[in-house]
Image 1 (spheres, rainbow, N blue to C red):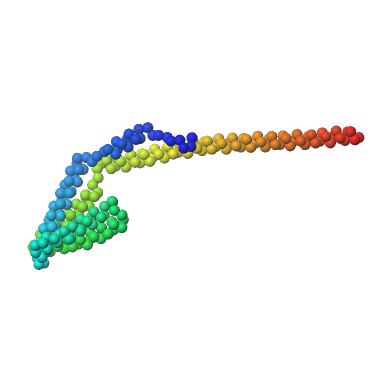
Image 2: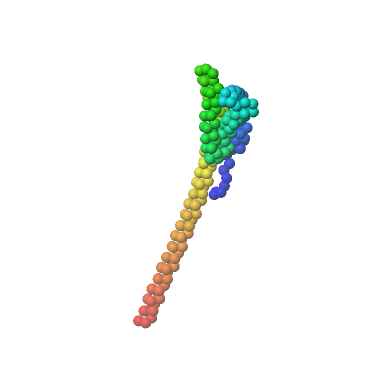
Length: 213
């Protein structure tokens, strides 16, 4: 009947099982390694920026505050690009990262004293960016399992809705057939009544003509 709910056996139990799936040890290990690379790159960049600041005449607090003004803002921009924020915030975070990333690259290269130092400075910034990217895209198999179950759940809901729609269509068809049958019966009754009235009138006319004749 219309409005009747069709339950999928075991659906709630399976959904609970999918939701309790946790990341595997390998995924956690890889994420930990990525975080280590990120921290290492950030530390290397910190040292290079301090060196560049000192080469440009900054000393003490000025030199050590510079990395927080550059890489610190870069980290803030990275956080602003996460899914927890709006698209507008994501765009602003991207701009912040581009500007601070360029400044960090320049400072890391400026700190070099040799060709290898230049390449190493570039590698540090590249490692920083790559570690940030990998940290956001690494996923375990549980994500695929959740997506697969979501598709199954959607298909089950569509099947249940199809059953409800088919039942509603059947009930409506029966109601239409009953209404048509009722209308036909009423029409037949009305035609019979009309025919009987006509016959009665003819009989009365014939009787009247006999009496008058």
